[in-house]
Length: 267
Image (cartoon, rainbow, N blue to C red):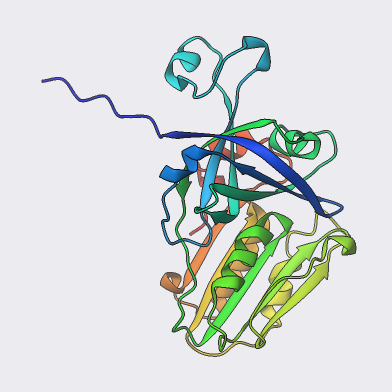
């Protein structure tokens, strides 16, 4: 008996409509296309997509046959990004990219993107949405987590209570976020890029009510340090959404591969 071949994820081929620099290190790309008619609403505020970048020298038209490219040693570069917002009626979505100068693939593309450029993606995935019945909401992360935190803040009911701790290296990256009146947002400037316990200390000194629901995402070692604080303070694992989005000193491909190893696990 032959095993049915697993169908590859559907690809959405979009066209860049505009870009907007939200801060010195955060650029928003708005893209649209009729293929977004099939872009599912999974109910997650941390909905993410896989961006596919194929060597332009190959002259290929999307959607791509990823299996064929992989077999030929020409696999696309794949990067994962949070969807900041989707307008399904208008067939349009936005993705906010953290830029790092001339390093990387997706961020470099986003910084240089112009109307008419194409963006190929699959998804969405996701796993979190704020519980509207929670007594207290706690958010923490670095600039890479800001799009997901921003989407979650916008989804909270007007009477929600809580706090967000957001780490930036440049104070100019502290942008205005829409939020309920009783949810405080603290932008914390960390001048030491090697200080992985920076956000953990903020959490350790914070007060929160019982029934807290937590969203902690960002740099892997920073997230591990925050997990230790949450564990010490008795927050149940089922009340926490937690993962690393990247890791200091690692390329994206190495970081993804390490997720399957002990160094990449966050319990």
